[in-house]
Length: 116
Length: 351
Image (cartoon, rainbow over all chains, first blue to last red; front, top):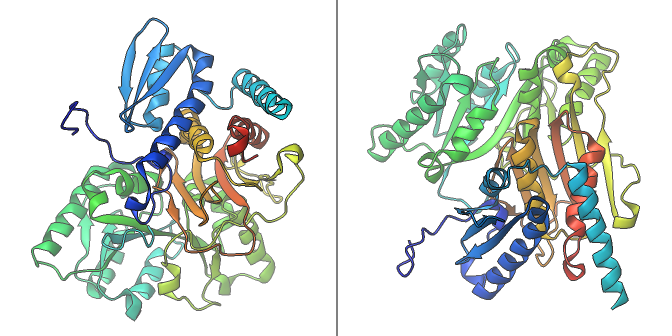
């Protein structure tokens, strides 16, 4: 438990990435960077359902819907079931509607980056 | 489950359909010097009790679960049995065994047993899943795979496969069973017995030390520099049970390093939505920014913590992911993974 805010520090989840043999070699900056990238990417999926996630202390996620309901989730594996409840939706990565939007975004992103 | 967890006791699981030679294999392994100091857990289910008596003479540390099937109904009892065994080991009431072997019933779906080992909050601090070895009967194996979903699941979760009774079947018969097995698990090495000698130390060596092999690959993902191969459940001239027909092995090969946030997002979401239909995930992947290959290893909803291999097993440095799935179309899986990977910013993009 964090001595300052009382948050429970979760064990590392597999989706956080492979653990280095020497954990001390993984600098905090590198962890934060990966965490930010993870949050940004998940948000590009969650916007499909009117949801948003943000990082909390580098170890938890806070998931919110448009009405302001929020829940803390420990890791990505549990995030999707909470998202389904808060968003009244089904989170399926094989959903053609989701994939069509994600593909458009991916293609647009690549084009705009090539143009700059 | 790998060199990263040297203090945990490896738990090897021996599974396989009724009469496929699990107990024979276990006895051979226990007779090997490499398997000294092994505790054995078997479950009592009909005739298996007789096998237990044989095992008990080999190893007095056997714990017999008294009721039902280890995998389907006794997960808590299995957990309790293993905790009890560990406690006895710590108190010196049983010899300090170095590894544990569990023999499942022939009718068991091994997935819940693997869940117990991987997810139990107490067990996972003392034990780690070693290798899953599945025996397949060369005489009846193809028919069992065609008719029994349990047999398919047993083959699907294997790290190593042992084809037994090959001396009772001609070469064409053996090849037929090999093809049937490969339909559901194209990555696990298969050893033919008794024609090939068993080397228990290698048979139960760290799982995933063999990289998943992609085999023949068809073009695809050309714009994304990645390819996909789909192993179709061709019934080989037999009439397959509906369940068996629905299962296929899908091999995804990605040429460029994977963006981990995109990959992790995709796989967690896939397992959330379809975990029950993803019987097995195995992979060796190249992660952007990481030089060592990363091993991915999961059964249905559960994924092991990814680990590093010391080096790439072959010169091929592409990421290879094999999913053994039920009723999940390969093109949809390929499209989905590709779309998620393309969401990564270009400077982190994999495919």
